[in-house]
Structure formats: C-alpha cells, structure tokens
Image (tube, rainbow, N blue to C red; front, top):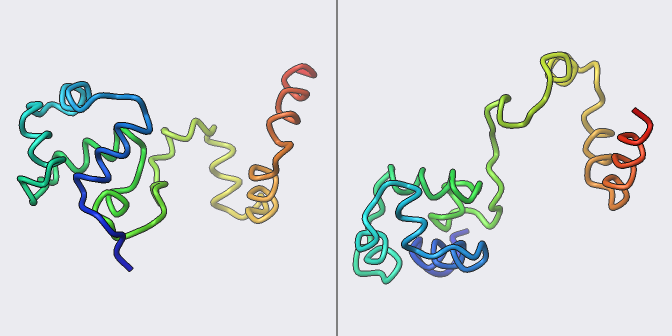
Length: 123
C-alpha cells in the first residue's frame, strides 16, 4: 500500500522533523538547493537514485519510506559496522547462539535504557 503524498513531501517532513533546512540537506547530500527545492515543491517529480540514497542515509530511513512504498521508516538492512556490534556478537546472532526473539524483547522493553545504565555502572 502506497503512502499518500509525494517523495518531496516526505523529504520536507523529514527535514522539519529533524530541524534541518532544505539548504542544509542539499549541502549534506551534495546537490544544489534549487534542485532539492524543485523536488520538495513537486515541480520535479522524478527523484534520482543518488538523491534518494543521500536523503535515506542522512535521515537513516529506508528508500521505500521516501518513495511512499512503506509506512516503516527504519531501514530493513544495515551494514554490520553501522550497528557497532562486535564480531563475537554478530557471530552469536548469525549462528543462533543468541535467541533473537529474547534479544528483541529485551531491546524493545521500556526499561532497557535503565538496565544499560546499571550495567555501565557495574563495569
């Protein structure tokens, strides 16, 4: 199911939600402010893959979200190095030595940040 609106509107919403101007975003992704402005305003309906990928990386969202193909903004895949996990942790996840369902429940629990703070104090 496609989301209502255009990629330009979603880019505008991402800028507003992250308190970044279109000009700042344009500089960060290496395009002219006028080019980005034309996309946001709807004057240019086609978004190049370079701009799409640049915006997705800058805001850490999926390209599908920007295109309106998914309501889920979080990317589905990450380079392991982006997650900051050790090689041993990745090995445990990949080999099944770590129960991923339990890990997900732990990470998503509302008190998890408190637990991390206590563990940090302990170490």
